[in-house]
Each structure stands twice: as structure tokens, then as C-alpha cells.
Length: 497
Image (tube, rainbow, N blue to C red; front, side, top):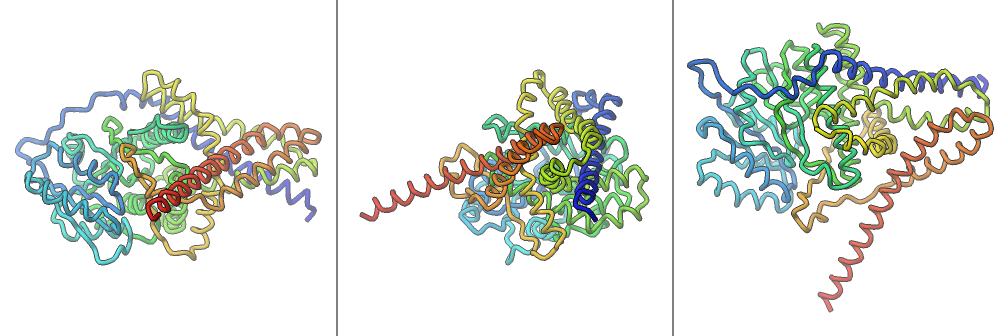
């Protein structure tokens, strides 16, 4: 096969693949607007109530914790303030920590117990199964029918359970998810960009999926599960890094109904440092592809509609766009040299590319009075979403090879009120060098395209700028870490002198 034919074929495949995922986002945005789902989000929550004669059910609040000394007390204070009947509330500190977090919880738990909170400090001999293993272990030692789950960086509101529990108004409702809100969206450019993506997901994607009988999943935190739903779906399993996505799809295949409550907010902390964001994205990307490998065939065989099967496939495989983007920029140089026609694929991807920005814009316009001001940070999200492709592609290749064990690497949370948060800082890795190298490659490709294929230049500039942005942030992080380490060594020498 001639080189030009191979390059053009691969180019068209990549362009078509990117267009599919872009048009999927565009379709979600159009459905949201056509159905006027924004009214649902802004509708005042109904007054929580139970059927006459019913009592509030017993609920266990599970708090999976692993080395969270900066935020665990904040989370525990919020849960202790729940206005739920104390005799119907159990709090489980599922503590797998290996640092001072355990000692802190050992002091906090008795203090809250004296105030009347039924709190259990649960320790395991090993961290087997990571978060999934901790949640499963907690279920074994609880008699509750319902389990609310919060990650360490959340601060649930006092009326959370009284809002959510009445939504379980039928025995076939297996899970209720609430919308994530932000504690720190305005800290820096990174948090502002992430908040746009999170708002778009919880405003448009989750709303359309839940209201149009598509498959949507528990987001890992800020939701409540029914025990019988978990057990009938096979329980928490740790063979993927996306235990929430995995269990959700298995439960939906079994006929359970999920409900999404966008009116109820669950405030959470956004990663403020690049490496923390990369680690979170790596885990989500690898876990999603692992779940796709595990459940795509069961999805095809399930009884859900063909539309749900199609959208579920795109949902599970969504992170595939990242290696596609890398291929796109790598192909741009040989495309310029071989003279392969590029206009049709570029037009196709350009039209599909309207989808994600529209989703994010709707999220800001619906949620905030002056959302257009927040949307002004979209260019940074665009750069971040492109530049993260190296990190996420690495995660995808690991998931497809399936050789490395599923070590659950936590996303560090700092609670910026704490001054010594550097104890959980992550070291910059090799991906920074690859990102900067691709940015240089894109610059060379732009120079070549200027003479042979100028229509490629806008995409090359976008992708090159994205890799330069993320690689540059990594370089700045590396320099900051180096200065901090040098300072620590100097202080250590002064103490020893």
C-alpha cells in the first residue's frame, strides 16, 4: 500500500471517529434545548415528605477515606450536621489510610459519638479492592437498606438525605444521583476550566440520559444506593478502576431504575494542581475503557433500546477521542507532504466540533445568572482537553493491554485553608516531555502546511497550543516543586547546623 494511501485512509478513519463523538454531544445539547430541561434544574425542590404512616428508612453514610488528613474533618463535620433522624443514621469511616489520617479519625470519632452520632471507624487488614473493596466491606457490617456515598472532598448539605430519600418512592428505584457543585472553581485557570466541563456533564449529559431512558451512571459520590440493587447486580467489583460506572451499567441491565436530581447540589473540591488533575483523568480514562471491555458485549445483549445501546457504547468508549487527537496531529505533517485532500474531513469534524462547546455553554447559561462570564474561560478548557490527550492515551493503552494491576491512585485533596498541603503533592512525570515534543512537532507541521495544506493550520494551531499549554503547566509545576524541595533541604541543613 502506498504511503499516501495509508495516510489518507488513517486520516479519514480518525476524522470520522472524532465526528461521531462530536455529533453525539451535539445531539445531547439539541435534545436538552428541545425538551427545555433547564426548567427542571431551576424548579424549586419539592418539599421532602414520605407517604402517610411511613418512617424514614435506616441509611448508612459511607465515607471511603485513604490518606485524607486535610479534608476528613471537614467532611465529618458536614455529615454530622445532617438533619436526619439520629436513630436512622449510621456513619461509616471506611478508613484504609496509612498516614496520620487514621490517628485523626481515632480522635474525632469518639467526640462525635458522644454528641449522639452513630459513627463507626472501620479498618481493614488490607486495602484489597481499594474503594470498591471498602464499600463492599462496609455493606457487610451494616444492616441498612440504603447507602449514601461521599468522597473525602465533598461537603454535603444538612438536608441532603431528607431531600434524596423520598425520591426512592418505588421499589424499583435503585440509585439516586445529585449534581456536583464546586467549592473552589475560582482558584485558578485550571479549576475554572474543569468547572465548565463538570457543569456541562451534570447539566446536559446527565439530564438528557436520565430523562430520555438512556444509560447513565452513578458518579462515585453524592448519591444514594439501595442495597438490594447493589446485591442483585453482583455487588461492588474491583476489576476496573471505574467501580461506579461498572456497577451502574450492571444494575441497569438488571432492570433497575436510576433517578437524577439536578436541583440538589453536592459541593466538592476540584483538583487545583495539574498532576492531581492528570491522576484523576488517568483513573477515569482507564476505568472507563476497562468497563467497556467488560460490559460492551453484555450491553449489546441486554434488553435496553437500540438507542440506549448506541449511546451507552459512545459513553463507555468516550475517552478514545484522546488517542485519536494525537493521531490527528501526527498525521497532519505527512498529509501536508503527500497532498491528500483534507477539506471534507475537516468540514465534518468542524461541524461536529460545535457539540462540546454548546454543551459547556448551556451548562453555564442554565446554572448561573451571568454564565457567559464564566464561559469566557472556555478557551482554557479547550486547551486542557486537547493537551491531556497524552496522559489519557497512556491510560487507555494500559486498559487495553490489561497487564498492570488496578492500583487505585487517589486524587489528592488539600483544603486550601491548610498551609502544609505540599505533603500530598505529586511529582511531574514523563508525559510533560511528550506534550512539549508534540507541541514542537505541531509547530513544524504548521510551517509545512503553510505551503501545501493551509486548511490544516487552524487545527494544528489548536492542538499544538493545547499540548504546549499542558506541557507548560507541567514545567511550571516541576520548577515550583524543585524550589520547594530546595527550600526544605536548606531548612533541614539549618536545623542540623
